[in-house]
Image 1 (cartoon, rainbow, N blue to C red):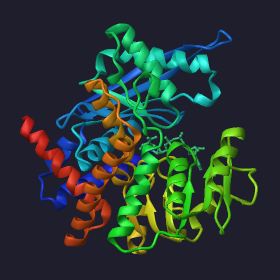
Image 2: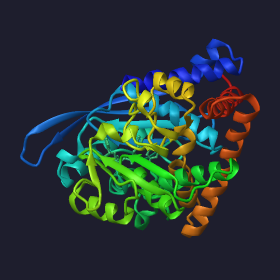
Image 3: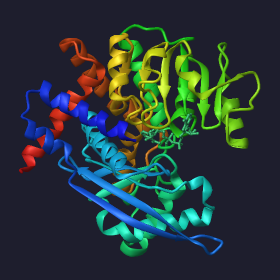
Image 4: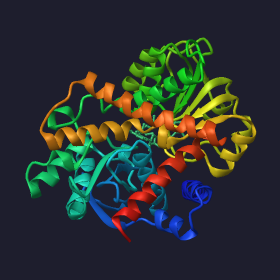
Length: 410
Ligand code: NAD
C-alpha cells in the first residue's frame, strides 16, 4: 500500500511547487491534524477472540468538518489511511464542498465475518471513537468492505450515546435518513465526468469501449450509467477473475449474476480472461474501480486505452502516471472522477441537518451542477497552462486548501 503514500505526497508536492509555495506549506498541507489508532477486539460466534486494528485519520478541517469513508479490508494500515485522508481533503476542496478530509478503516476481512460479528466490530469501533466523530466534527461514509448497513449500525450506536443523530454518517439506508441516489452516486458521478469531458472535447460516446476493473459499488454503477449513455462495456472484473466480450457485455445480466453467485465469472456470452489481462485490452476508457496501485510499473506500458478514469482512490502509481503521460494516455484523476460519492454524501448531510428529504431527481440535478463546475475548471486550467488533468485538479484543490488553512490561522 506504499504506492498510495508516495503517489499523493508526490502530486501534492508537485502542485505546491508549481504554485510557488514554500516547502513548509507543503508540510502543513500534508500533515494530518489528528491520527487515531484503536484496538478492536472481537469475540467471534464460536467464542474465540480476535483483535483488529482500527484507524481514523483526520487530515484537515479548515474548509468544514472532516469527511471520508471507512474501509474494512485486511490490507488497511496507517499509511494507506493517511494517504486516503489527504486525498479526501483535496477532493472536497476541488468540488468546493464545505467539508474537510478524513479516512478510517479496520484491518478485518468482512467476508470472513458473520453478519453479527460484523455488527459487533462496527459497534466496538464506535464505542471507542464516538468522542472524535459527529455532525460538525467528522462524518464517516462507506468505502471498500462497508455499506449502508454498516453506516446504520454506526448511526445507531452513536445515537444510543448522543440521541438520534442521522447526520453522524452518510451513505446510510434511506429508512434511517439516507439520501436518495447515494448508492449509485460515485458511479453516476463518474459517468457525468466522462459525459462532460466528451461533450467539451467533442468526442462521441455512442459505442465507445469501456473496460472496468472491480464490479462493486463504484464499478457496477459506472457500468450501468455508461451503458445508459450508449457506451459499450467490453470487460469487467472482480476478485474471482475478468470477463470480456468485444461486442459488449449485458450489464444488467452481469449485475444479476454477481448478486446471485458473488462474481461476474460464470456469466453467459463472455470469455473468461485473467485479471491482469484486463489492463491491456484495447478500449476508449479504462476505469480502475477496485484497490489502490492497480495501474503500476508492471502494466503501465501495456495499457491500450485512450483515457484512464480513476474510479478507485489512488489506482495509478506515481511511476505509472509518468509512463501514461509519456504515452499520451490522459488520466482523469480520482479526486474528480470519483467525487460523486462525497458530493451526494454532502447532500445527505445537508438534508439531515435541515430535516428534509430530497427527491432523487433533485439529488441528481444538483450532482450534475457540482460535477460540471469542477470539470469546467479542470479542463480550462489544463488547457490554459498545458497541465495534465491531475496537475490541474491538484492545483485548484491545493490552492483552496491553503487559502482556508491560512484564513483560519496557524
Ligand atoms: P466495493 O467493495 O463495493 O467493490 C470493490 C470491487 O473491487 C469488488 O467487486 C471486488 O471484487 C473488486 N476487486 C478487489 N480487488 C480486485 C482485483 N485485484 N481485481 C479485480 N477486482 C477486484 O468497493 P467500492 O465502494 O466500489 O470502492 C472501490 C474503489 O472506489 C475504492 O478505491 C474506493 O476507495 C473508491 N471509492 C468509493 C466510493 C464509494 O462511494 N463507494 C467513493 C469514492 C471512491
